[in-house]
Image 1 (cartoon, rainbow, N blue to C red):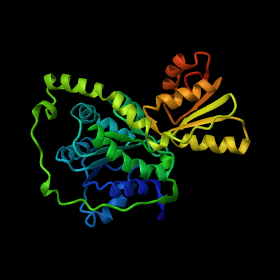
Image 2: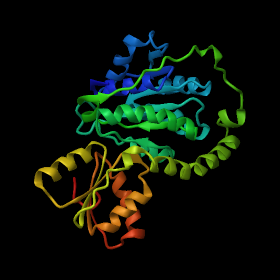
Image 3: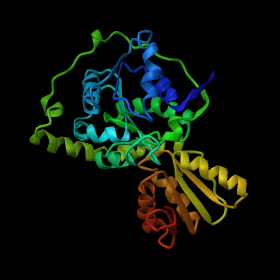
Image 4: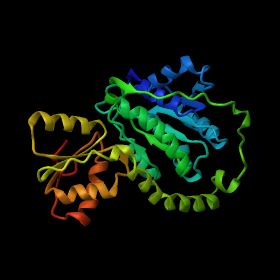
Length: 320
């Protein structure tokens, strides 16, 4: 079944399809409509939903729910992740029990914000996976997937929609929403060595986090947004992430250019797919919103797989 949904409403639909039990947020464009879409149906789906006093508190409430085994999501705009950075960084060490998705909506071009930030940097900093949707359909599907991935890795997962994804409208294939069971069966199991972030515990948990990095790469390697997107033709290529990939595809089609393209939907990117691509081309253009996160990855990969590759991006001045 298809529904015509705003990108943020599609994310809300994904939260319902995943069977989340707790959703917290602090309002801020371009993220506000997610909670506004969920609030009218919260009783129907046994969903605890709240506007928190700030983003830090919102994340901490979601963490508490996750540690009892309840799937939870916390929603904010990019500058809100600055406010929530303290528990966010420590959460990567302690990990989660019920799936926990942090939705941080970035605002390229400052449509409604005091600055531009790339939330992928926070995922990079915290050593956790990040999903970068290109359209409302991917936003919904990635939300559902993020809860599963979070529980598989026992880590929070960052979803990073940008303004033109959050506020786009499109036909979205939707699934069945799940009604969360009563939370009375959930409980918090005390384990100070894991949940209490004292220095002695944190050192051990940091090692656990580092040991999970290969598992993160393996899981994202099989993510559907990094498969069947590789088109090899010509010796010039484009690697793009998020909605930038759709812009690139449209431009290549209109110009009828003999250009290879690889769209990426995850951070970290898939090693094998990127290696195959950069071996095939002699010049590559990196297109992404805000920071050169993907470009830096390609630069490192090229040193191993194609040292002569010419890379055009923000670091080289090829793109502003």
